[in-house]
Length: 175
Image 1: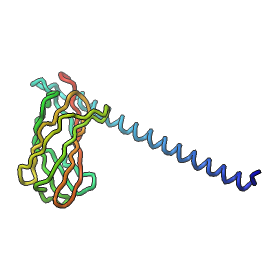
Image 2 (image 1 turned 30 degrees about the horizontal axis):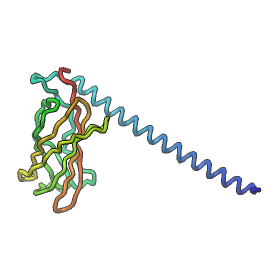
Image 3 (image 1 turned 120 degrees about the vertical axis):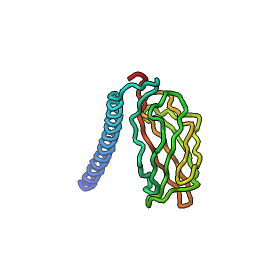
Image 4 (image 1 turned 180 degrees about the horizontal axis):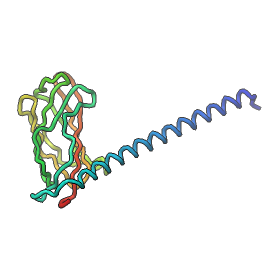
């Protein structure tokens, strides 16, 4: 038989567990709602874009300057096609600098192209080639369909390693 104090402790532990569960569920809901609102906002801004004359699609993008995940690197896409045909290899020029503004030379870079809404990743990897003065040509970036895309760069350099990501929405053709 339990004492009243033991019953009280069990009740408090049950209450604390229920509060933790409710908090986790609430935070998950808020995160999902935020992601849905971002995706909808990006889609709506794309819908307002004029149709592209070349059969490609005008792109809504976030190309920088962007601060890396650890805050050590800044990156910006400084050269790209403003019209991106679906399933056509792209060529971007990316500028990488330290947080202090010094160009990052001879970095090793990985490129991962994915579609956050579906989890799809592009099988053929893009390639980054140094051009000098902190500029890199990223070629082979390909978007297989309309929607929200994420291009993540992993950067290894003499001062360390970091990563950053660029987001864009490729609209349906003819929108």
